Amino acid sequence: MSLPPRPPPALLDDLVELVLLRVPPDDPASLVRASLVCKLWRRLISGNRFRRRYREFHHSPPMLGFFYHKLSGAIRFLATSSFRPPRAYRSNWHAMDARHGRIVFRVSTTTEDRMLMVSNPVTGDERWLPVPDLAGHYGCATWNVAVVCAAAGCDHVDCPSGGPFTLVFLGSQVLDKITAACTYSSKTGSWGQTISVEHSEGYVAHCSVLVGNMLHFILRLSNQILEYDLDKQEISVIDPPSSSQAVWAAPITTKDDRLGIAMYEEPNLCIWSREAGLNGDAEWVQQRVFELDKLLPAGALQISPLFCGTVGNSCVIFMGTLDGLFAIDLKSGRVTRKLLEDYDICDIVPYMSFCIPSTSTPPGNRPLICPTHL
Amino acid sequence: MAAPESGDGNNGAARMVTLISSDNTRFEVEAAAASLSQTLQLTILDGGGGGGDGIPLPNVDSATLSKVLEYCIKHAPAAANGGAPNATAVDRAELERFDNEFVNIDQSVLYSLIMAAHNLEIEGLQSLVAKKVADMIKGKSPMEIRRTLGFPDPTPEEQAEMNAHMLEYGWAYE
Image 1 (cartoon, rainbow over the protein chains, first blue to last red):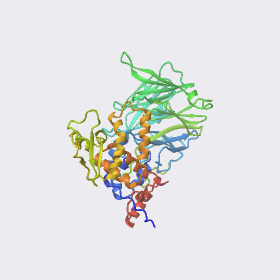
Image 2: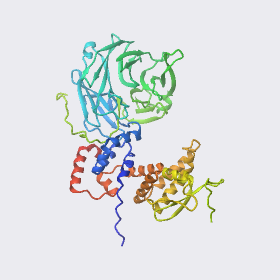
Image 3: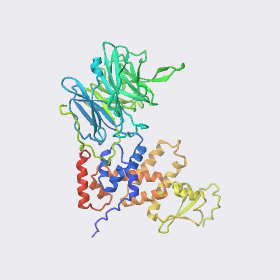
């Protein structure tokens, strides 16, 4: 008769950290479950030391998933990790931008857009604020908003969840060819002064990228880039590469962290980067041309693909086609086929963050300060 | 009988060192392989471990040490190239294949290995085994992790606390 198997020896405490550091960041559910194994593991995982070592070990926050909208407007979250947002997102919410662990939604009512909600889906922190007056003053036909961590000295690898943030709000008045901008500081809880800039015909479109301390937005129609300096709170216009006859354009970051622009010139996606020219002035230099008709399946380009969004600083562009949603990695030229089958995807907002359980109240248990009528 | 080594190493032949496990088994191994251990590297650089002396390793038994050395011998050439710009894709694939098979072992051996790798400061081995144990956690409930890793059954108090936390992190259990 054989003896029952001996239970394995318990893992030495010293070595627990070595093991837990190697739970992949795109599997936060395993890390959460590990944190419930025992008190020691919980203390270890929620401690500052582990948090610091975990982000050093993994360098940059993973994409936990992305919010997307169908042309009908309904908001969805497609998880690309084991993370699931702990709260339901309502159909009148529209994901505008995500950066540094936060996401900003526009919350519409039947009559007008009037609230913004800044959320950290990992911690459940939420902040509601009104859309600035700007929209009223300038009769904005369209607007966009970007969120940026404002914690002093933060390297933005794992921004403090309760820390300060800045919103940059841009509204365009199409007829006057003007875009106005103002900034919200969570430290003061108020919107600052409004500034504005003249440009060619166009209006500010979905998507923004941060390069250094400059936020960049794109104007639909003219394909000009609006550059917002977060330090000086100044706004300026950058003309697109002059040769271009683009159907659409999107601001991107290049692999060496410069400003770039991706322009769709049927059927090619042309990538340009902003470089210092011989006389010291910045100029556009073409980096690469992707022949989409060779990269995408036949039939996908029967009508022009729709620009849907980019992945922060990872040089990835999402495109909606008749054949479904595709992602193209501008560094490698690799195409991720059919993330979604739907042909009617529009705005995509990827959400990148570490998700490390902390000792504070987990999501789902926080009181929600939400205007009751929204 | 091998001639005692001269202090300043070798004449073409690889320098050998002797390691002695906690149960007094002697292992003769190339210094380059043993030097994957940061701890041993210092002793070896000081000229230790040669000839009849040997380096005693009171915390590592012979079964574990033989496994550790199997890893070191396999990885020593690549380590000598310093991460090896000239390592071919084939070499790397072969090492990867070796690593995968290497950790496909009984859990108690894995634990002895990770402890030995920790004590001897063999970074690659430590990382390899830790990754394997992390893989074993993947997809398991806290209770299953406890059983897998040999925790005793939780007390009713611990169980109640676990249940409460599970409720709070419902999304991780979908």
